[in-house]
Image 1 (cartoon, rainbow, N blue to C red):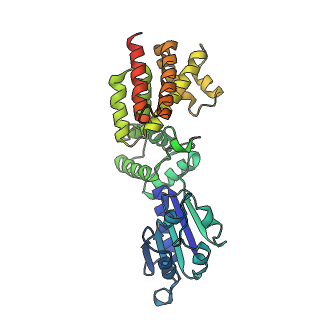
Image 2 (image 1 turned 45 degrees about the vertical axis):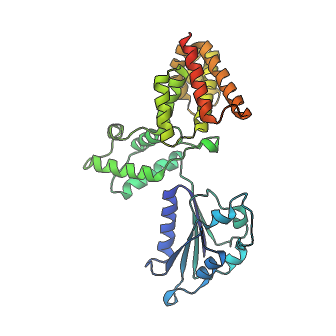
Image 3 (image 1 turned 120 degrees about the horizontal axis):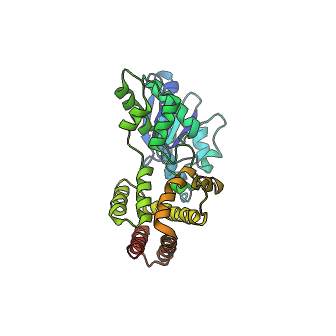
Length: 338
């Protein structure tokens, strides 16, 4: 048997590996693990094709082997495995389990020669209703209960922008971390004991996700309020946010603000729905800031983002972080001269 488990979610990867091992070697007496980052293809093949202990099937788990040899753009060398020969060498009673959480799909060169009975497990975290169902199941497995309303409230609390659907731009997608959600549910069950998890408890116990901090930064940036924007930017960077993502989101916010300016007195949420915004309700929240900033500052902000992008591409600014600082200071200067 051949099985492949990929990410990106670490929890789904671990769960899939555990389930396969329980099926193929419940006693854990015939399983061995190999570091695929250093193992040679021949070593993997020899281990996975050899007879198991006491005449039983052998299970060989190889971590990070696929990414090493089969990532797009990787140059195939003499040491690259012959995938077809490797898979053909595995006897039916044995299991070769290739695990790579750094990949989000099976490389085409590998998938092309996989046996028809091979198992593929992609650790892509669920969204929307599927995520809520997973959360309720996780609560039951932890000995508690999570209602529909409470599950949705918790999902929105932790991942307000990404729990329901993927971003149209994969580069800026922030998929729900199922491990973090599982830990949070277990903690809430403990806090609620012997009662049930309520939205009030979630509100008191669970911190808002990164997106809310991003919104605070974006609102302060558009307002030209450096006293708030700069500390919020520092917190986001320390939390691992990419400057390129923040600059792109700031540019998007400014673009939406310009749309609101030109929409006149129309309902902001309706405007958001008309343009297909992912979160129309956010347009309503932005409307106050747009009204305070005024058309002139929004125009200045648009010019600042355009100029920063041009200067980054020309090499006049070192990187996106420098571009962010330039946009922030330009908007703040426009505010001080208003």
